[in-house]
Amino acid sequence: MKLALLCRHTLMSTRVAFTGSYATGQKIMVAAAPTVKPVTLELGGKSPIVVFDDVDIDKAVEWTLFGCFWTNGQICSATSRLLIHKNIAKEFIDRMVAWSKNIKVSDPLEEGCRLGPVVSEGQYEKIKKFVANAKSEGATILTGGVRPKHLEKGFFIEPTIITDINTSMEIWREEVFGPVLCVKEFSTEEEAIELANDTHYGLAGAVISGDRERCQRLAEEIDAGCIWVNCSQPCFCQAPWGGNKRSGFGRELGEGGIDNYL
Image (cartoon, rainbow, N blue to C red; front, side, top):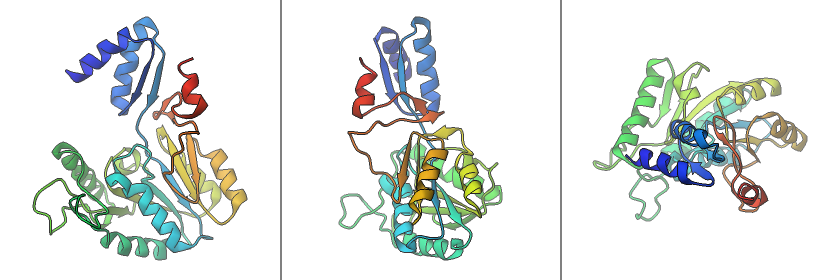
């Protein structure tokens, strides 16, 4: 019903700007097509974070976890695919797991909370299904993927880290919209770029390295609307925001966002 009303409004509008899922974005484009209404879409993502072996591991671990688990993973730009250089992979992953186990999952109003519940029972069950499917496909659940033992009610799920990924797995290809990070190793810069672009989405991405020239190269080669360097998730209202491929088109924020309406 809500989607029908949205599509009806689309036909009456001068312009439609929508933020949401890829599936709903498709329907809005269909509704806008008969009258050729202009559309701006900011849709889903499956964004990469690429970490090289010349980093401060503790800082890189912190940014990696923040980039995926901030807002309980319920953000379209979540950097939920970690590409980690093989030279530091074991140490990096061990530290991530240890840090994740110390993240306080609780009522958001409770002091010290770092991870709250997901938005609904439907989304909670969807996330659990993603995790279960990854395990059935041969991936390894290193930590998380279940309700915390100290919370009997609510749609809480522990921060989840998954390894032994191959690029055909659902967990690699589909947006989870929850606190789930999948991890894959790489050996060369070229391999990292190829893996980063191995997605239908193109909203955001991040590169963490001590080599500024390398960061610049990857920022230019990764096919996404926004690339962060040595961080993940900052957003500035002065800068344009939006994606490529199935992440949509057009821009919000900044002069680019205003230009959409002029």
